Image (tube, rainbow, N blue to C red):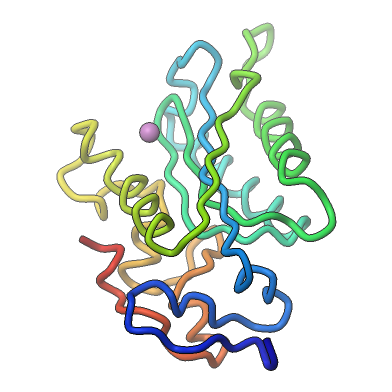
Length: 194
Ligand code: NI
């Protein structure tokens, strides 16, 4: 689409398709992947502040290196959910493999069992409604678990970026980010905050 602009629509979320040239492919298929991976035998290996922080830093470095589009994430004590696009020029599974290897190398204690479960779950997210649904699911995960009262109380998710527009450790591809690039605000900020 010329100039990387999609048509406006009255449905919330659809205008997420307004993106700069480099991301034109997402306008065509909206291909995001909702990924879930767990710590080995679902043990709470991430349950220490420095581990969450290390994972976030590594996710950001993998995002930059592979030009991965990260739409959202949540880190839980024994599992992680990511909503990501496909990196240009290489399979998503390769980028995820690198992320798992690097985080494991940094976080695994010596002589310990593996850090991650080998497999991960990959669910295709083909439309904006599904994308919003998955964002809500991720942001509410810590509330459902009873860890916090509000999604914004959990520091290890993309919720606060969606609520405030602030850039935190990981650059999130959101309506805020698109706005900062000079594009129109694609949908109301509240949509992911409920
Ligand atoms: Ni979960």
